[in-house]
Image (cartoon, rainbow, N blue to C red):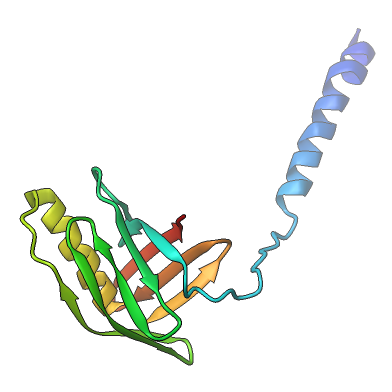
Length: 144
């Protein structure tokens, strides 16, 4: 009975455990695709400073290849200039409409615009646009 128990249950169980242990120790490979040009694409905000976009806000931006940026903070539209040189991103003064918006939307829009003003790096990976700097971060996905 002991031999049957050993052959039918213990050995297969040890084999599975060894396989799980070995596969968990394999080095992870990270794939970073070739850098794509983030201009002339509508980027829709997914999160601001690591927090998801709330409510029905549709926050988006577009970076034109001629140095113009425009979009929506969720309620108000904005536009202005940006530069992206040697991996460093910055915006010039941004003009913005002044619509009357719900308080929670105003707060989220303020956080978005503040983060956009503070980010200094930009990188596109796997179809997502990552912007970071000065304690702020923005994450976008490609829109239609």
